[in-house]
Amino acid sequence: MKYMMTYDLMESMRNTNQWLGATAHAFASYPMMSWGANPGMDWLKAWGEVTERTFSRMVMKPDWNIPPVTGEKGKDYPVVVETVVEKPFGDLIHFTMPGRKPSKRRVMLVAPMSGHYATLLRKTVISLLPDADVYITDWHNARDIPVSAGKFDIEDYTLYLMDFMRTLGSDIHVIAVCQPVPLALAATAYLAELDPDAQPRSLTLIGGPVDPEANHTEVTDFGRSVTMGQLEETMIQRVGFKYSGVGRMVYPGLLQLASFISMNAETHSNAFRDEIIRVAKGEASEHDRHNDFYDEYLAVMDMTAEFYLSTVERIFKGREIAQNEFMVAGHKVDMGKITTVAVKIVEGEEDDISAPGQCLAALDLLTGLPDEKKASHLEPGAGHYGIFAGRSWRNNIRPLVLDFIDANSDAPKRKSAKVVSIK
Image 1 (cartoon, rainbow, N blue to C red):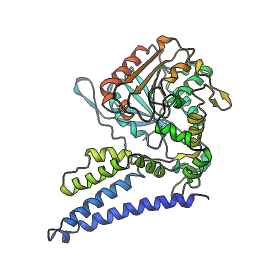
Image 2: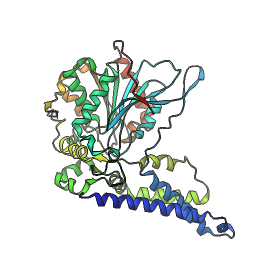
Image 3: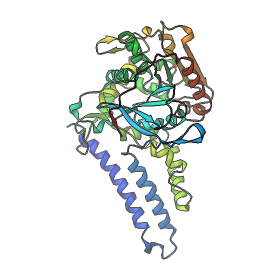
Image 4: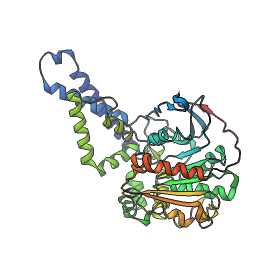
């Protein structure tokens, strides 16, 4: 039961702050508080509103909230989320639009499992839906997965991706963002060896750490400066009694969030201060810029301990992908086995998470792939978020990716994927 008390303590602190915010907001909202001019009550109410929303979002999985897509002749098509493959640690979901003619472009987005939910790619999904049939990996919060479901590390993640690709068929185009980039590359290489007909038509890798040593960042420096024993001792806890995954060893989402915020503490403090001022003045709204960003940013999920530790040990410290020494289920995966899948690399010039060169290293591993099947793009002035969801993605990168998909879409006729359940 080691560290279970710490997990419950963090949750208790979060819950207490949510309660204090709700209490302050309710107290300052009493009609009697408006009998006389009292700016203090306005500030208390504003503080309570922002505080309650902030701490409640930390344990909520955001909704997809995909708006209708405008199609031919200006007709709007509502977006329905369907589950195609359902697994203990993650699902493959499909954004369908009943009544719309199927798109020739079929895209599978591989979302990161790095603290936030797959909804982090909501804007990416919205930007692709008018021009493509979109699927995405929807990873589950480890705190909600019973211990009886077993482990989940980077090898299991890779096997999940292979199953998802097999389900969708060979006319799929895979786009991996950030953390899963090296594992999507490994999954494709393993399929090339075991089941060549199940390989995707193209693989677009966006800002991921194929070789973390190619260009150092604070993330890679941290990975090199701590031992695995230190990480396990300071970052790993057991899920408390409140959740279905009680007893599971995890890297808690709340602890991850504390790390995220500490990296830019002053920026976040100013943002929350300014939002309280706006609420007090009546200038804030439910979907203002602050709430739109922080509703997603604060929504964190626990990662299984074995996934987090194996990522640090094998991807960052051991550089198994970079050195083409990655093992899955006792089998060495050879990236050189990829000979037909077109691969495109996208990096941001100002990316401080996966700096330029880390993702580009993938092309050197593809010794069996002709040069005409390789492509790369470095987006000037773009940071990490911008290359998959920001202005750089919308205006520059997205058109290039769609052109790359079209140039590699000579696929055979496919069979429709079987829908397992509907959300």
